[in-house]
Length: 351
Ligand SMILES: Cc1cc2nc3c(=O)[nH]c(=O)nc-3n(C[C@H](O)[C@H](O)[C@H](O)COP(=O)(O)O)c2cc1C
Image (cartoon, rainbow, N blue to C red; front, side):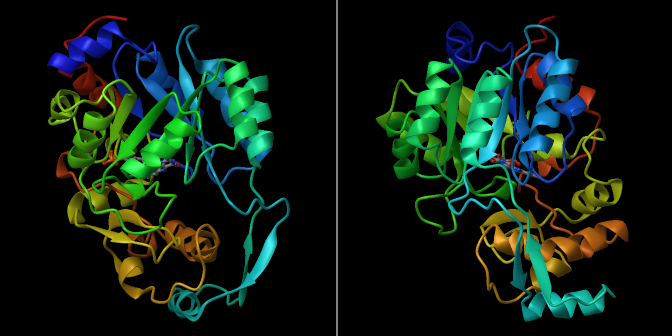
């Protein structure tokens, strides 16, 4: 309990409970969801990944309109090395075509990679909207972005899977860094080397904490209300949860998806769906996709139409079912129940 007391005294993020709801790109959470988390004294993150600038702006404006006056929130941006201003068309791979035939999808031998918000556009938007916290995944903000964010008093959070990435984030201006272990649901945040991360959250956290005793660390991956205190005791200032929030009734993941996840539970690490290592529930999609022609995010767009079709047909076998491997997080419950469980770890304190 040593660290829990300590971090409540030095509350870097000025939130009541040192727990963060991860950003979840791909339409999993809504402005109402994020604002509800923030209004309960946790930090909720808006997922900027895959969004164009207009959609991101709408998400931020709506979230803000639902926030209590002093509630904090953050916005997460994907760092895409090849920024695309316009939509681009690519030729489809054979393994995807085969599955599309199987699912009776209208055959088409090409697919479109959509333009997404550029880093400098996002930074200007964050400043214009007075966003208090900015985080980035799959890389780190460039020096112009960092200068602009810092001169507007916006806190910067990096995402790291290794000591080297942690160092990189700090040296380039991060105020705090997320340390993500292999248990994490969804994509691995790796950006210096795209190798599969198989190191646990706790081991990576302890290794980094020894070297950096004073940096604000957010632990991520496999954390539940049952094991949360272990991470604080091993040096985390904050913890963040993804899968547990995704499994709540209020998330936009479909009921069919959540029930399939709850029943099947077995997760795998795969780079075959999006071109980047990610953890999700094993299903026909993880088993039948074969050759990875394209890197992230192009492969994401290549497999997106067949996943959308599977969603339309309520067929979880061909969905990407991103989820972490801690079974305690694979239960369905209301968001209110999850928030109560989190608060009870710290002793219920009324807001
Ligand atoms: C459905 C889903 C979507 C995610 N999307 C994002 C994202 O947009 N940005 C990001 O930085 N991390 C994303 N993550 C990864 C989380 O940041 C985090 O590392 C992970 O959820 C923590 O592990 P847990 O799921 O075991 O709690 C996502 C995770 C899930 C489950």
